[in-house]
Length: 456
Image (tube, rainbow, N blue to C red; front, side):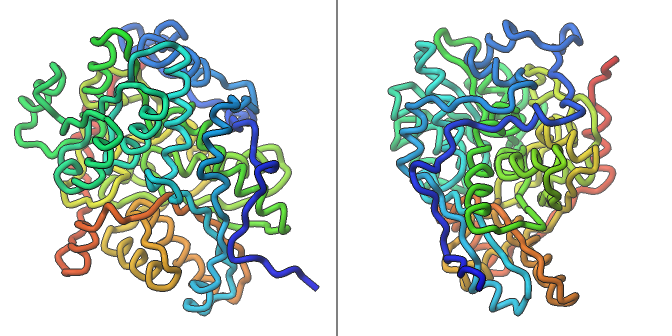
């Protein structure tokens, strides 16, 4: 008789991963290297170390080591909120009338409300080890900024956050959580940096973008002694730290002989998607198992589904290295009506390469459809999901309904990256029936593509 799968599957402390997994080690075609925009050559460790902590720069360039030890102090911190549960969505399955089995890995059981703490504590740790005064960063919806503020508070580091202006205005409570943890929060673009003033001159009245905020944060880091820049998504080092999500999920699945057919994650810059799928992707790359991976992005910022695979600046101010990725152009600024995160103009180079090789799929969804799925999930499963996570929920429900039509008993796993309790302005707009969808036209996207750098 098959064993009953619990509603929530937890690992014991002894079963928690002690190493991060680096999927690049198993990739036959490695992600294209970051380039120095001045020389056009791959960036060196010395060059990256002027922006990032030295140890993080080493992780960023490491394509060879499959497993990297998690320092004991970080392991200890993880135990405050990890393991996170792998939950069987029995109620959702019943409501949908689907033969599919649905599981989700929940990352919202910490004060930051999201998965972002997994990487912020690692990056703050390495900054402290290097003897730095503090770090600078950007944040969109505010999850990353909140997580970094917490991590910096833990290690006694100064934290300067440049928050995308429309989110700064729409999400005051997340902003205030950052300030409660001691962070200095500035709406971006701002008048406090040279690049911010330049952006405001070129785009007067702009609501901002992650690309703008990154430019300001990098400038603040390199012009203040004892500071380095840290990033909450996109980078390979971030996917490495976030692999704790997938490693735990895979261990929980193996514990109960659960074999996912479809693994789904929301996609902005790639941190949660990459973290969830990396260990499973490793099995696929090594020929040990097969899975169908689906990246779900907003139709208003569709880097994978409508972007170009090319070298581009990681930021609007064009001060960062060039990365080869699926991109809408570093000058692309999503419409202010876009309510959630997932606002970045490009996608992780690791995920871009996997997508380009056909190892995962991508789809874009409109935000009214996303919030309809979020509301449905909240009413059935009892957790109010973050708008970002709800992109994955939308796709999971759609795949489960396909199983209902065909009678296939597939197993679906998706990432529930966090909670939506700081996103009530967006929920209010949806509940009031005033939320609208925005899909950029081909002409809108062409403007971003026109400014892609020429790389020989």
